[in-house]
Structure formats: C-alpha cells, structure tokens
Amino acid sequence: MLRVCTGDNSISHAAAVIGIAIIALGDPIGTQMSKRMFELILQYGKPNARKMVPIAIALTSISQPLPELVDQLHRIGHDPDVNVARAACVALGLIGAGTNNTRVINTLFALELYHKNDTSVLTLLRNSVGLTHLGQGLMTLSPTYGDGLLIHQVALASLLAVAYSCMNSEELLIKKDPLLLFFIVPAIGPRFLVTLDENLEILPLQVRVGQAVDVVGQAGKPRKITGFQTLDTPVVLEAGKRAEFVDDTYEPLSPILEGFVIVRKRENKANEEKQQ
Image (cartoon, rainbow, N blue to C red; front, side, top):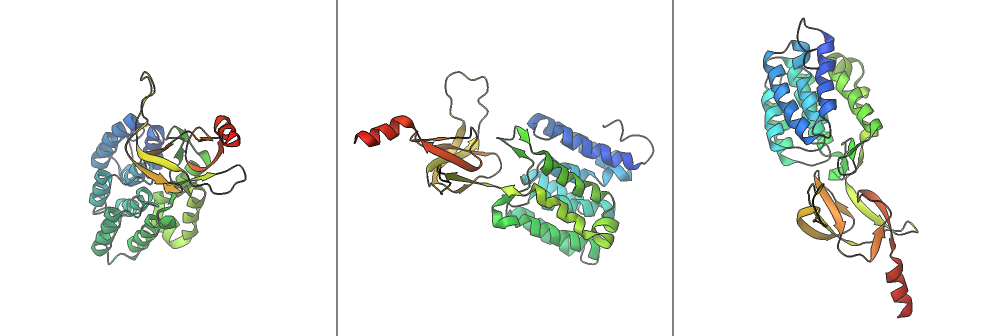
C-alpha cells in the first residue's frame, strides 16, 4: 500500500492510505507501525495521499481519543492545504465519537477560532462536536468488538463510506450531499454493559471494570483486568476496558461481557436456595 502512494498524484493514493489503516485495524503493533507511515506520507506524499492521512489515523482509533492522536490532528488541522485541514476536522469527530472527551472538544473549539472565516471547515467542525457528544457518552462508532478481536463488517463499511466521501469533502459533504454523513449510523453501537435475566428483565449485578490485560500464554488463571473498580450494572465500558463478575452466582450466556448480556443462576446455587 505504501508503494502505491509513490509516483504521480492520483486518486488511488488516497485509497491506498485508507487501505493501510484497514490492514492495521485491531492490531496494536500494526497500528503503531502505521503511525510512522502516516507521518512519512504527510511530509513527503502527494496531495491526494496527504488529505486522507487524518482520516486514516482516525480509523485506527475510532472512539478512542488518545492524547497523542488528538494533538497530532490538532497540528494537522492548521495545515496550509485546506483539504487536509477539513479531513482533520472530520477525523477529530471520529476518534472522539461518543466519548464526551474534553480534550477533543477544546481542540475543535480552537480550530473553530482558527478557521472562523471558512464556512466549509466550520460546518465539519460542528458536525464533529456533535459526534463527540454522540448518545451523551453512551454510544460508540468502533467497528471492533469481542475485546477488540472481531470486526463488525457493516460498521466498518459505513465508516469507509464516510471516509471516502472525505476525498472531496467540499463537494460531497458540504455542497452537494451532506446527507452522506448519515452513512455513519450503522456503525453506532452501545458502550455499556447491561445484564439481563432469562426473562430479559434488567438484573443488576456487581462487576469489576478495569484495564484489559492480555493473558494469552500465561499459566494458571491470571486476572484479565488491572486497576479495576467494583460497580453495579449497567455500566459504561470505555475503550480498552473489560468487565468481569465479582462472584460466580450467575453465569453469562456470552463469553464476552459487552452490550446486552443474558445471565442465569448456576445450578448449584439454585439447588442451595431450594434446600434452604
């Protein structure tokens, strides 16, 4: 993909940059390597490649506003090429979608002051502010699920529709068809964990919520989270967080505690209650 970005300026350069982000999606090591590629493209790439770099950066961290990425997009938002600046405005909305992140909001307001005379950029900035407040912090656009191991194909396709619209954001997203932004709707999903009983009634249970830890290959039964807090469901799971039950009274019917999870009381616990 990086080789495609060389040579004469072409629209295929923009598609190749997005391709790099898709290849790295869900892979922490690949994501770190792709950031280096994006910096090189931003410095030495052709215009069609440069204007898609902010969108590609956002695709590797959807609804996960890492401070270094927010600062990088803030810097790109001051680029003399207005197409690159517009893409940075959309990218900030994608990485901050559904997080109510203060850093992202302050960055968007700072860019709004910088581009106060450009109505096209202001329109995209206000859309990004709305995405940041998506669902009042209860929704996400992330196409990954299952502790980040699986990819929701419909969500990824809807994000790509918006990403490719940014190849000519002034004509497509601002002048001709701003409704293209609604292609992002299929990617919207819950960020919370709700436990339900077998009758689909909400059943509050105590869970530990903490930073996810990779335990693949470790002996025994190592703890899968660190720095946890004990909360009652429903709870909001931030990016990179994982939940586990405090006790074994109930067992989940899903191996992954995300979204809506049906639980049932374990047979031995149910028998003990009957004997009592």
